[in-house]
Image (cartoon, rainbow, N blue to C red; front, side, top):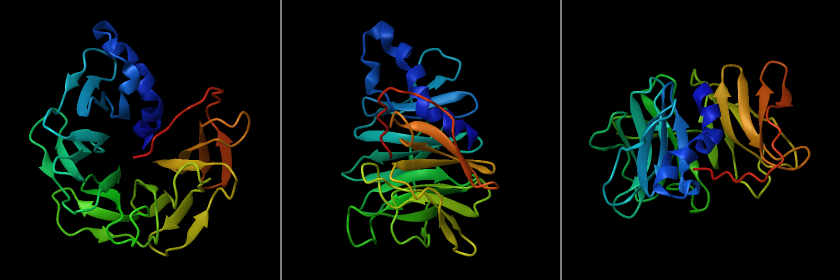
Length: 250
């Protein structure tokens, strides 16, 4: 969705928030943005700040690490990963704060990927049934928990679900291994590799009929934002940074 495109670069806007406290803002991680708020991880806790700037407030402070926050489509709920008892699971809480609600509870890490467009379910990755811990598979789970639905992808790393829930964009491996992005029609199971390149193409993000993603394709071989038009099947570069960019997938 559109606000997620800004999240990659929103961390740069957060640097001034901690300048008065002489805190190194490079420790800010995993930002996400709604229509009017930014949520991010700092010091193992979740923080939130107005999109137009101001004082950041800590949303969580229990023992354990919270990260990878994702705003729901209506911006009223935040889903996040937390390690409260030795393993990362998925929790939710109101955007204004509150007691975390546990959504998953498997012994393997369950890592948030995206919200479904209706705001009723969450897409996540877990290696609980893949046979090897380094390889994950994708699941859909209701926000109130319950038995998750396994998606028909043999192996996956990072994914995003289209706004209508009909298409899944994903990579089957992570950066450093030159991943390509695949799009699967969840009704027909037809799957297309949209990159087929030697570049690292990853972190897909849907916005209407376009799929945005990060790629180090082209000169000077640095991560930049690209977009793929599902109608014309053409790729185009959106940003043109020449500096080294480090992106850490969830």
